[in-house]
Image (tube, rainbow, N blue to C red; front, side, top):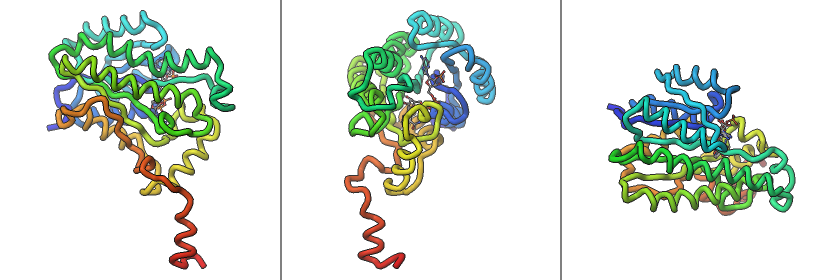
Length: 272
Ligand code: NAP
């Protein structure tokens, strides 16, 4: 029996098969969850419908999270289709491309507002709206963060500020929903080549650096994020809430980075 057998899960944030949310959907499907999906705009509808079909679902709803009416329609439509909801995956972030070019000091008022709205407020609004569907079901919510929330990652800029706010939001929401028996956690994923990632100036260098420095020396995959999401949404994680769990091959434990090559050369005499 799968770890999510009988659970009903709503997955947001699939743009294509490279999306982190796609890796989560794949893992949830393998573990027996029933899935429904949202797409942000009409351009993505067909693609998300095809992906839903791949997972045996025809429940696909439009939800641009900058629009309150889309969020309340989503609740209406979902409650017509299902008698409840066990899991909700928030895999959405956005900042205008120009916000990744300079430094935080160059952040525009509009860029700040839109990044916080789409990437952070959407978690609050969706959680509030979807909560009644989770009544009596010990629901679980997952969102996606990144290390730039706590340390400076050059060019990540306003998105780092948004991720810090997102992680804080997870803690406050965890408190708010705990009395109803629900949980919320964030996965802090290492860099993955997705559409959103390519907006970040110099993303390929960030990726190269992360692979070189993390203890395993490799990139993480959307499947690895998916497997962690399964655990967090399963009953095995029933006492875990308000947490930020790293899926980054251990990158965040490292303090000193560039010694490895010199140690090999100067201490062990390798490559001489
Ligand atoms: P992705 O495939 O581009 O997914 C981002 C999703 O957010 C897209 O489906 C996008 O839809 C959606 N979105 C943007 N604005 C929206 C809006 N107004 N309403 C509804 N949906 C909206 O990229 P991803 O990397 O999988 O990103 C998923 C999450 O993981 C994000 O929170 C990201 O910050 C986080 N994350 C990513 C990495 C990484 O390295 N890739 C690492 C750690 C955390 P559109 O395509 O229509 O804009």
